[in-house]
Structures are given as structure tokens and as C-alpha cells.
Image (cartoon, rainbow, N blue to C red; front, side):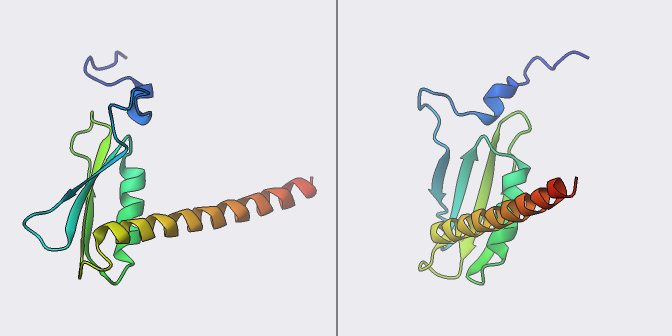
Length: 123
């Protein structure tokens, strides 16, 4: 089959340009909702969006967390977060959520490597 003409190059979908023209994360304060921000995270998709959303919802200070992919041909996600107060605010909540995800993934990697080692030893 033929590729759609307006489909971005697969390489451009996950890699930021080398010229610094695209920021990985931009944060916009929501002027209508208290203690809320929207983060635009470039070169990410549902994988990070859903992981981050679910981790944020584990935080008792987070009132709302959601994400969307604005357009299937644009490699970015928009994450909205609202917290109960300014301290900790939504940016701190995202930072904490990302650290929790990183810790969980490190733990999963260690368990995987341990199991892989056990499998290799039994051969």
C-alpha cells in the first residue's frame, strides 16, 4: 500500500529536531481554572499520555488529569492537570508522577533481568 501524502516521516514522529526549534515540553497556565495547567509534550503518544494520566490520578492532591492527542498526524500530546491547591501545584504533581513512573519502570526492569537470568541458567 501507499503511504498517505501528508503522513510525517516515521523518524520525525519520535525525534526532536536537532536545531532546537521544538521544545520537548511546554507548560501553559489555565486562566479559567484554578491550579491548572496544560502541558504539550512533543513526540509522545498514548503510551506516555495514559501512563502519566493514570499516575496523576493516584495523587490525592490531583482533582483532574486527562490527555488528548490533538491530531493523529501531529506527534504530540496535551496533558491537563488540576490540583486542589498551588502547593503542591500541577507542575509539581506532574514531576512527582513522572518520578513514580520512572521508579516503577526501573523496578520492572530489574525484575525482568532477574527472571531472564533465571531462564538462561536453566538452559
